[in-house]
Image (cartoon, rainbow, N blue to C red; front, top):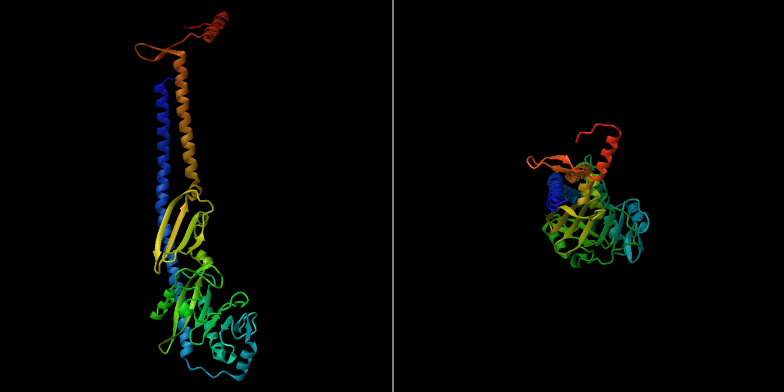
Amino acid sequence: MKLHHRMLRHFIAASVIVLTSSFLIFELVASDRAMSAYLRYIVQKADSSFLYDKYQNQSIAAHVMRALAAEQSEVSPEQRRAICEAFESANNTHGLNLTAHKYPGLRGTLQTASTDCDTIVEAAALLPAFDQAVEGNRHQDDYGSGLGMAEEKFHYYLDLNDRYVYFYEPVNVEYFAMNNWSFLQSGSIGIDRKDIEKVFTGRTVLSSIYQDQRTKQNVMSLLTPVYVAGQLKGIVLLDINKNNLRNIFYTHDRPLLWRFLNVTLTDTDSGRDIIINQSEDNLFQYVSYVHDLPGGIRVSLSIDILYFITSSWKSVLFWILTALILLNMVRMHFRLYQNVSRENISDAMTGLYNRKILTPELEQRLQKLVQSGSSVMW
């Protein structure tokens, strides 16, 4: 094949690839726009979920404040005796239900710095109101549908005046014990001091990302102040961990996307992060979205290119087959042209191939036809 014919063949083949690829590029651009909008929707849904959790925490704190403000009846001798009998000490900590559920009046665990059970009698009589508030918010009619996630986050109450902490879920003191009770000044529970100071403004605060002293994992917390007679008495806290965030960001309507989605929460101040989900294969990120939430939290989402290939496999297969068929047609056309030009002579006036070149093979075939008596027109 002559050089200019070879160059023409390569040019046509390249044109075929470009033209067929334009269809795939169009699909890729359309998918990029659609998935960018979907990532924005995921972040908006997560932001709304945080607002819902904030509302819940405020509702629990309001319930506790109403219970504290109400006139408390005197604790009966029987109840006082039951509390003191269940009062125990373990791991340099004192309280109720530290290692086992010995006091049925409380659902969770109470830890205190005091060694005298009389100092927590009133608290033990009051804390069922906290249990009722948490339970009531978890079992709302619309809970688990819409913004509320059908899951149980970790709630607890810190009393600053009486120096005790009450966990709604039982916490074994052998695994975690509150030993430093000056956390409001030093931030010893892990929460940044700046976040604790914001509680004094009277607003619910979403903390920065910190390492939880109980689980040793990076978490965020919602802090809602509890006031009595205008004075800060305690804080209702809600921990949001990695599992909670996975439930918030999980793409229920597109489960395939979750396999190729990267989701990370980063604290812009401390640099700590929570890797919520990672793509099974990180080939190339073709869609990404970054959004800053209030409180210095940055949400980063990205989708691996393998999601486009997997979700649009019909389009990719159509592109491959079309390109291969057209390239094969180009190859066959030039091979046929090469065969015709090799076996025929073109007319000087018309340029058309109208005469065969008498090759030894062709001459041998003609001789056989003549010898057999067949008519041959030449």
